Every structure is written in C-alpha cells, then in structure tokens.
Image 1 (cartoon, rainbow, N blue to C red):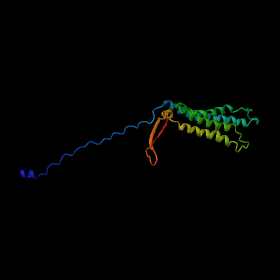
Image 2: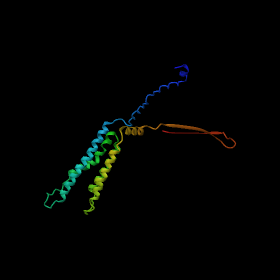
Image 3: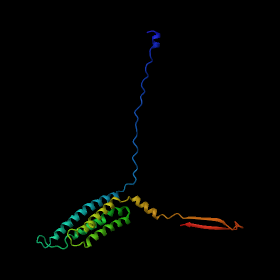
Image 4: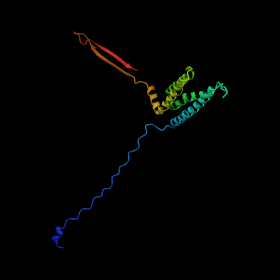
Length: 207
C-alpha cells in the first residue's frame, strides 16, 4: 500500500465511552414522631380485647339470663328475680372503665375520668330510668343508652388515646409560669404657654 493510500484512509472510530450506571441511594427512613411506649401499646391491646370480648360475653350472658327470667311462671324455668344481675354489673363495669385504662397509663387522667363518667351515666340511665311497659318501645332506651352510646364512646376513647410525651408536654406548658414583663414610659405635659412644664410617668407590667 502506498503512502498516498494510507493518507486517504479514514481514521479509525474512537472507542465508545463507558459510563457506569447511575445508582440512587434510598432516602433515610423517616424519624418516628413518637418514642416507643411499650406500656401504652400493652394497655391499648389489653383494653381493646377486654372491652370487646368482655363486654360481648357479659352482655350476651345478661340477655340470656334476662330472657329466661321473662318466662318466669310459665313452668318452663324456675323463677329467679335476680337473674342476670351479676352479668349486668360486669358489663357495666367493663364498658365504663376498661376503655379509659390506656389514658390512665399515659397520664391523661382527667380525660379518662370524663369518658368513664359519660359511659357510667349512660349505663345508669339505661338501667334505672323507667322505660314504660310497651314491649315494642321499652327496649329502645336501654339499647341506645346501654349499648350504642357506651360502645361508641369506648371506641372513641381508645382511638384517641394520646401519646405520653404529648400529655407531658401539655402538662408542662400549663405548669410553666408566664414570663413577667415590665414597662414604663415618660411623656411631657404642659399647656399652650408652657408646652414642657411637666412630665407624665406611666408604669405597667404583667406577672
């Protein structure tokens, strides 16, 4: 091959550039808003089970015994005027106090007593208020005040249980004394002839 032919030959193509594939690191896991509280978790789990299972068992036991008491005198069952009393007391105690137990654990005692008082008042009204003798309507009051209201309040109580640090932060904010502030000022006083014949001194503060 002559020199002129080598000069006219095209230059070889450059080697392809190699770029390693891009690698994106995953973002760090989010920091939990609240610290782990095993006492709160255990109280919520235990109260939920006790509230749901305990209220269901005690309520069904009361209804069964109460139904048997309604047949008193028919010769089918023996008359027992106290039938279902123990189950009713157990049901009332469970739906009144158990859902608020997690609040007592985290320190939200006032709200816990408030919810317990509302459920207890609802149960007392369902038990002791005379609802009449009409069989088609006398069940409505005990059903609404003895079942629907306390069960709904219990679910809300459990679902809105605060975290311990939230309760402690609110308590510290209420207990923290306000920062005292003091202010004073001086203003000139006078009349048309003597515009600066005196001064007015004012003083105020909040403690």
